[in-house]
Image (cartoon, rainbow, N blue to C red; front, side):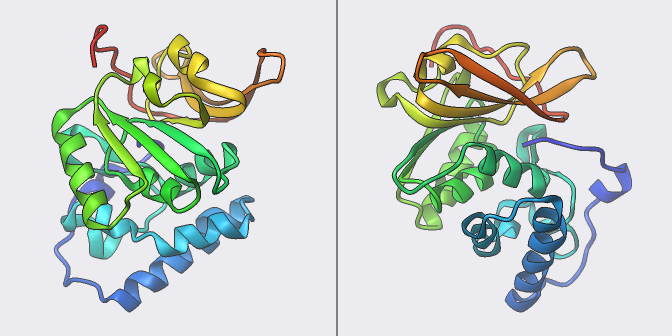
Length: 236
């Protein structure tokens, strides 16, 4: 939920007339072509999902007409952000989504990543540590008729043990190391994508694959900048 450089000026709401559905559709197509396809993500199933899911519905209305499909993150409630579209696409692609799979997301935020996943996999379990954000995103996803998304307010460090194992795990906030519970809850041959903080200013997006032997294969994807992962004690 959280990546990239962004000039402060671009974060200022712009009071413009509401865009039409046709204008939003055109903006989504431009986003897919220039931000996702031209950066190397060519899977047609993923590209089509980004054409379908209306990102502007997950964005603060003040930013919708001019910036909803821009190549940068945007502020949402509770001092959080909705990620740059390319980062959402890259993380989605990295876990190799399929209709038979079950995926865990840590950090629901606006709900946009969960909506994208729900179009590609069998079930999505998503956890948000901020109660207000969790409630808002749960309502929005329900209103948009996503019935294969399960939402919870809770501590992402603990995962969702009663629903494990997961074929894929996406973490949208940055811990200093991979939470042991998430490693345990990742299925054999499963894939996790998670930003890891090595210092205050250095993070890498890491792909973690659990091999048939149970060992982990780790691959650095790209440098990123996500908000820190909050460890809320031992409770949900």
